[in-house]
Image (cartoon, rainbow, N blue to C red; front, side):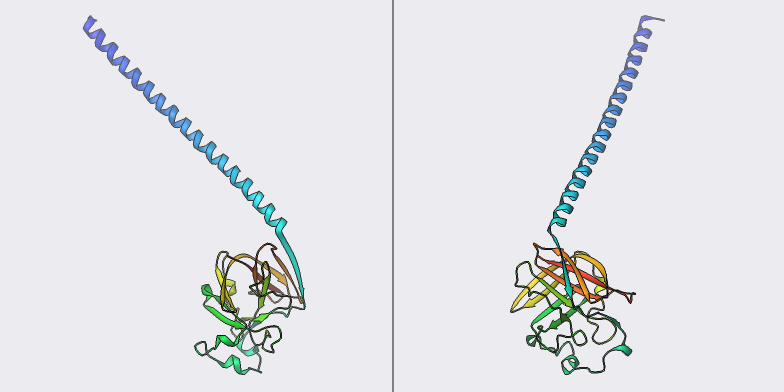
Length: 230
């Protein structure tokens, strides 16, 4: 083999070796990058899990279990089961309702609900007439208080909480009281037995709105919706 051919061969061989080394280097860099991404994701997941555990611990420390006795049972009423003593104030259509006569007004845009409620001393504060304020409640202007409202579900004319089951965590509700509208966000949903006692699990450092109605497709349970003021 002549020197010229030998030089060309060596040059070509060296170029191939150089290309292989580049490929190996690039491959190594890709592997290192992949390992870094996997490690970073793992570290971030551990960090998120730790934060979640800390947040859960904090929430548990601030939770308070309130036991409310003498709570009327909400029912899933059909039209055939609705009360026959229909009162005059329930005969108004939505367009005719004079909300100024109520102590407060509950609005839930997600289910197109707007309904007034009376005070504890009113004869209309009755689950068979209206959205009802449960004894032991606080009005929205009480810091860290809890306003507890109940109503029936179903398709009767008094089934004002018929569509609460459609609510999702994060949905909003509004309560207007003494000229001020308060905004709440849904943070928890759970079921309790119908036994005349409501167990309210809420953050004691939050001003809360609690909604209670019968559990869909159940004759023995009621569902509790916990909303915190935002």
